[in-house]
Image (cartoon, rainbow, N blue to C red; front, side):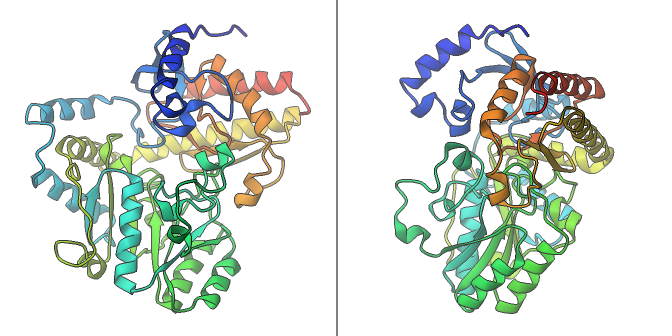
Length: 434
């Protein structure tokens, strides 16, 4: 294996560290848990990333999920170029926002009203505020290992980058901000029921990633989501599905359609912007009518419903609606990747576990099943670090953390999947029995 040349990335990283915390604008990019120098990406197209040193990588991050058609698809690029001729931002209402709301409602009918925002974090923060305003209650229930953005109340036993950094919570968050945040165990309905028995009239909502994609990929067990729905109904609380990852990726109507669970509110992220900065929250009309200017739950944003982001997102969503075969293809490729990894692990006694659903996958460096946060934390991050760098040097770009998902796009082909599997086979062959 020949080491990649990364002199330009190293120089950029040195410059960045003088001006940005950790040299990055989002923690996991710093490669803190895997070591080494983060790659500075110059451009992306289809299934590939190209760094500042001219190295080429098969991309399995896809901007953390939204690039389901691959990078820079021609139809989205053309639509954005056309929109740019009309301006970047107006701070005023546009027809595009109306069209986006109509399309989302058509695809996911339970989203009767919605509000565009600028990120998944903002969508979650605003949805929780709406739930509290509607119920008149303060407490919320989240699940250990589920990540719902970096709003103060959500940084309690969060997943993803917080797990990677080994930070249980966050400094700078007053105790009062998290005093009403209760944590349950994913895939454990008894833990949810116990919290409601303790606070039967104080819990405003339960928020959950329907597929927990920030502690790797943990799939809900049969009846888990339905059970949460029933508990919420029993105690008069709202159910919020955080579909920042699964929305329009798991299938066109996301986890709502896949699992047949109707939330009171749902949050979406960058996929509805085709990868541009955007988010949304919405749900039952009677709840959303409490949001300003109709009601007393305040939320605002100058760039909310940005016309360029709306144009990009509309183009991608309409394409996905017209081409359901995309979901079959990405599902087929992801299954090929997962089954290939499982075969490699068996042959080389790799002591690993593969989780996944649809186009989401995760290779855990633990032989035990992973069904919750405690299980995920058993993964051997030192072994993942070795695997990550071996695969990176072979041109495979995975999330630089054991606890991130592997995303496959419609631009990937069997050629890339089989190449990646060949590289994984070489790694486990060299580390047989570990």
